[in-house]
Length: 506
Ligand code: SF4
View 1: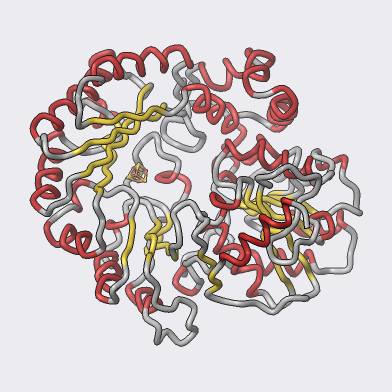
View 2: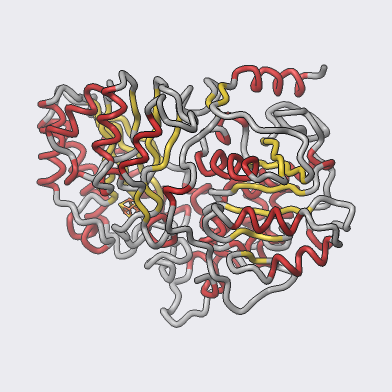
């Protein structure tokens, strides 16, 4: 057994499976996450899709990840079978920065990267996940088909077609006729995303937990899909529409008497969803968890939802940090980006949390937002300094990201700041905050934010050329080589009549 196989065995033996599936069904799908095991296993979307494929009577799915040791093949976790030997290979992709990992996986697996260079002897390669709702075109020269939107229900149609004893091309033709599926070989004028309104009829939780996952040994579950707040810069607030909330009956799944026994009582739950407490049932679910002597963790919280009742529940769950996302330092800019929160509400929320013995605060900000001025940047530092001096017993961690004009958001027409501009803003914030002892600040790399921007906005041809170049030479060289294309795609403000390629996704 080589290093790679030893590692895969270690991962598999660490896993706690909440559900087991019958193996050896006709259609075999290798389901991949284009990042390492610890990251992929923390993705609820990936786990939901894995569950859905395996629940189908005709299909068994095995997982694979970006190898974290040197290897010349890519093997699955379950049977350590080479992914080349599966009927189809599916990827769940949520982040543009994982595109290169996806290509690396195909390269290690010795599969031709470009779809037109693959033959009928190669597995069909498909992609689902959030990027399909943003702009799938960047990678459409590498992918045979995309599932655009929700995976529930449509996966059964996909399995049905993939299982037919017909040629690869006939399967792709049939798939192209399905609403919610985009086959680059058979493009259509309008790509209608697949939406499932009855989410409660489908499992919304992870089924395998492992201490190797990024957030530890945690059962993840989805409380809502999408977000109704619609902050102008935010893809999650635009692409997942309509917003769907899971109902209170869902919390029954947390109890061991749940008849399917899919979720036994468990120690740690990760509640997944944007603006979690916009779901009126979330408090009940959280309370249910703590009443069962379990804990939960949350991502950020909307300021206006933070009150004594919620903090009491959070305290019981042993949550020590409250995370909020003002995004901009000044109220002027917050209003312009659709983030309706005042400085007063931030101070008030922190005071209530401190009164409830929570002393650590994480705050998300963004630089490079449209119309941002020097004063708006200074306002980030001023706000942090003011919080840190007013509440000197508290500790503040600020995380500063760079604005990316994501397709299909209200700001899709806006220009991104250059790396140089973002670096100068970072230096300004660093210089003003470096002597405050109860503030830590972390910054997103302006270079990687720019790469994310490029990857989210390219068309098929430019996407192919840029990614193939970056795969061999790295992003810095690719950025130099494709400077003109990048300038046009990312650093120029577009008119509101621009007919972007992604406009046909509805
Ligand atoms: S930034 Fe948060 S609150 Fe605003 S739309 Fe996105 S997920 Fe919703």
